[in-house]
Length: 176
Length: 146
Image (cartoon, rainbow over all chains, first blue to last red; front, side, top):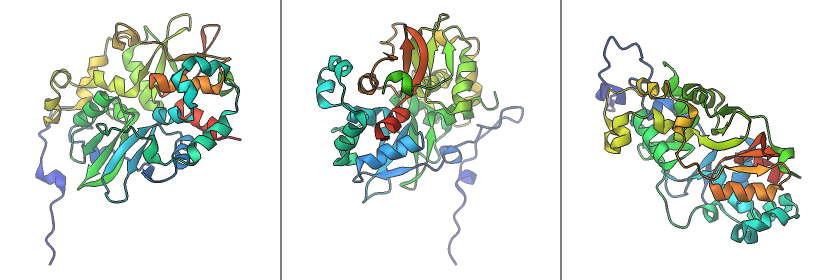
């Protein structure tokens, strides 16, 4: 007979004072709060990422690799915007005002041949990741420190879900 | 296509609005952040949802991040940190360059400004007064269209 593992929350009881009227966040861990969220593969086409962000009005995406189920990076929508700006404008923002070319053509042309990997910073940065059993205070701390619109939640080395900043704020205010 | 063809109605807060109300607005509407304006509707700053979270953190975590894992504490209790504060109290003393573009600016200018300031939303002004807001995802949608 297979050994049944205890559910995680029975292993680490959290003392919540009986008299506390606020119960909502007492034992809430990252995994209780996270949601399903679109994930993109690092070698998929950059235009796919743009489409996902645009269609679902997302503030960012979680990027994974083929070899690992752990999130590799978080790609904020604001970072993707940089790639629809022509190079000469990035060099000299003053030129932005005089550009007349169609942006749509440019975006498709500029992103068409690129992969998501090309849009990530060359140097790997701290990625906003939380463990499934992290408290939401820990999640909030990571999010605030990295100024990230979302945090990826990992359980047993695999992506479990995503928590957005507004969702976390909503949890913090819920029983207020 | 100009900035004013793209911008949307978006909740804005005034600098002397209640900080708790602002946080609630972000939470309820699932916003990436808010544009902060003065009484005459001139944009002053953008406050992001993640920046707002910083003020909800317990003070001991703000002082020492390794304490974030302390069990038994309740984030909601610390949301009280916002009580009695105004939105202006949450903004840095020296305001960064306001993430704003003119209504007549082209989309490339909007994108350049947004990526330079690393800000997922940008205020659109007409004669210096707030006209609307453009989010990064909205801008990407416009770039893909046609």
